[in-house]
Structures are given as C-alpha cells and as structure tokens.
Image (cartoon, rainbow, N blue to C red; front, side):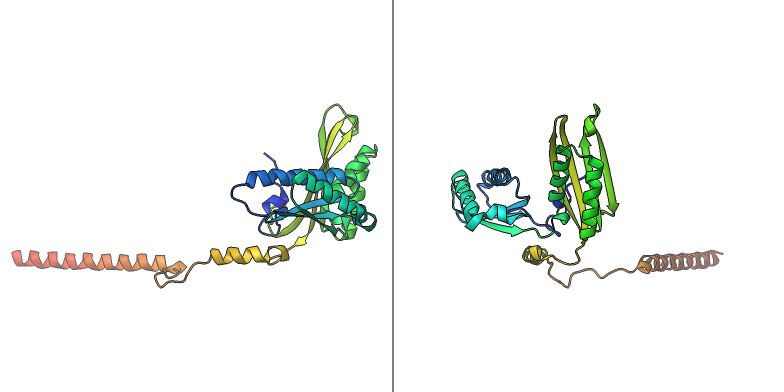
Length: 271
C-alpha cells in the first residue's frame, strides 16, 4: 500500500517517450542489457558533467547515443578531445560504430534528476537535508516550476532508526496523465549508509500530442481506427427504454380487455 509508480513509465506513449529507440525480435534482451551497460558506463565516466538522460538509438549495425547534460563543455572537451575519447571507449565496449550527440540542458533547476543529484551531493558534504531540500525547491519554483516535491529516506542525521521526510511546494498531480511531471532518483553515500533522494517536478499540462510523439501517435491512430459500416446500431437516448416499456404495457392492457370482452360474450350466449 502507498507505493508510487514511476511518473515517466506511467506516461510512456502519452507525453513521454522511451530512452531506447529501436526494435528487435531476436536480439531484444541482448540489446536491452547493452543499453543498460552504455548508460551506466557514460554516467560513471562523466560523473561531474551533470548527466540527466542517455538515449540510445540503433539503425542497422550503428549505435547513436544522445547525452543530455548540464555541462556540455566537460563532455566535449577541448576541440572535442573528450568526446572522441569517450567514443573510442564505447566502441570498444559495445563492439559497433558509435556516434555521440550532446544536448545541453539550459535550465537544470527544472530537471528532476539533476536536482536529486545536487541534494545528494549536499547531504554527502554533511549539510542539513532540510535546508538542502528547501533551497532546491525555491530555486525550481523561481525557474518556473508549478510544483516541486523532494523526499529523502534513510538514516537521516545519523539516527539509528531510518525514516523518510519530504518537502513540497505547489501541486504535483501524479494521477493526471497529461501533466508533465519529471522524476529523478539518486542515492547519497554517507558514513551511516545510503540515503535515497527522490524528486518530482510539475512543469504544467501538455494539451495535444507532443513533438516527440507525433509520428507514433499518428500510426497508432490509423491502426486503431474503425471502418464505418451501415450495420452499426443507432444511438439510444435516455428516454427510449422507458418509452419502450410504456408501449409494451399499453399493448398488454389492450390484449387483456379484448379477452375480457370475449369472455362476456360467451357467457351471454350460454345464458
């Protein structure tokens, strides 16, 4: 009871898209594990670059990796030296040609993963978790977020009994599928153990089909469209059922009266 589903996983195909963009019938499990390996490897190599998401696209035998980062200079390096180095390491790790694309996150205060990592970094530096949460929430609200919720759980302040505390400002509608709710999770490694940090950021509602899902939604609508035929049933109004029952009742009364008249005529003839 009380368990929350992943906000991005709940909205996949509605306003969110997948991090792995490819299709395979035979090598699905192999490529999926390979994507996990790529994402883990990139985040370990670029731990200070503020990596939010790593998307993997596969076309034939080539692999394209899209890195969303708040510090693109660290990923690219001087004259692209760091990017070429990372590309060579990934090609050796994966075993196929790799292309790296770097996308800059212009507002890191509105990225839930980066906010979680910043709070975890402050907790590792022995800062107060309440102050860290309030500071990041106020920064996100000033950046344009409509609601922010941050939850930390573990041995807070070195207490023997683990607990969870949260701070929220604004509104975070988790049940509204058109609500653009970003979610991030990370762990802070302290001397007392690991402390989990979760962040929800509500950026507003998306009306219509987003740009990253326009092609998929059109295909889905065409495949799910029904053909109009003349054999469809007409729509029944609310009063149809009642009027039908009234008509059947009147017909039954008329039959009863006819039978009664016939019985009276037979009795007169007998007399």
